[in-house]
Amino acid sequence: MSFEVLLTEGAARDLEDIFDGIARRDDPGNAAYVLDRIEATFTGLSEFPERGAYPGELLELGIRDYREVFFKPFRIIYRVSGAQVFVLLAADGRRDMRALLQGRLLEF
Image 1 (cartoon, helix red, strand yellow):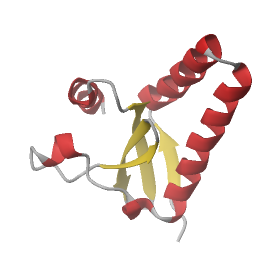
Image 2 (cartoon, rainbow, N blue to C red):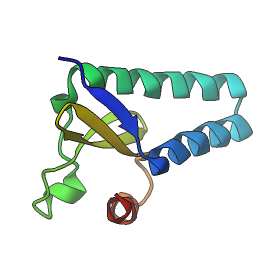
Image 3 (cartoon, rainbow, N blue to C red):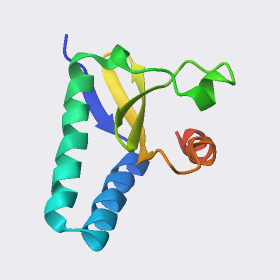
């Protein structure tokens, strides 16, 4: 069974920010490579959405509705609902993930 992977508005903005940040600091070619790899991770979620671990920040609160996969240093947080995977956040894992998750989950 193949799952449909959908990006929330916040996740789509995250991808734009990731691309722009890498292109500005490094090279547009490297930014495109990173974006391609993150998108390949989304494709993997369409086949195996349950493969991700529970984010530690949420697990500490007893929340098991969300999962995460990595394309280091980026963390991709998502939720599986029926035959759909909703990507909520794609961010550098070195950021304050508690604050990011709190803000983003309140939006969703």
